[in-house]
Image (cartoon, helix red, strand yellow):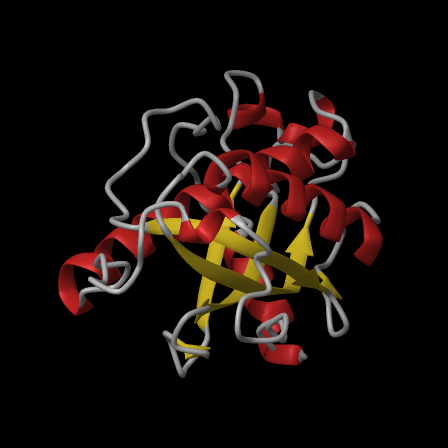
Amino acid sequence: MIRLLALLTGLALLTACTAPTPEDPLQDLGAFRLGHNIVVAPKMQKGPVSRDATADEWIEVLTGAVSDRFGRYDGDQLYHFGMSVEGFMLAPPGIPVVYNPKSVLIVNLTVWDDAAGKKLNDKVKQISVFETPSGGSVLVGSGYERTKEEQMQGLARNAVDEIEDWLVEMQKENGWFAPRPDMAPGKATGDPAGPVAPPQAAG
């Protein structure tokens, strides 16, 4: 817990890049199609001076962001996401300019291959993202300009963007999502449960 809180505090002082949107052009993920989209938050930690946010709120916003982006991929092979919220910090209003924290989100991700009935990554992938600053929030912190809901949505979209980049990297390096000859077109359009049960979210 102490290590995670220290990481949140350190990340909160850094900056971020341009916020992605769900409508951005899709990258190449081969035969990928999203099946189960599981998000949990049993061990979630809140960073210092953060606004409050419940596990249910994070589950809702992350599930929606993943669905909005990865639901656009229409490949013929199902892959499931198991994700856990590890920690967050939502910059509050009222922080002096000398201490200008950025909102932070840390999640763990496991990807499951439905047809193979196994994980693609045996070791969870940890994603750490910051919110994207607006013009004013660069100087005074986003707590002055954004609601909690806006901060959470921005962090969720940035997390999805990082996940997509990592999946593209894994496809290039390890052949993830390569089309299989035995996977007939349209086979993945049925029940996403396939031959395996819903995956356990990454812990």
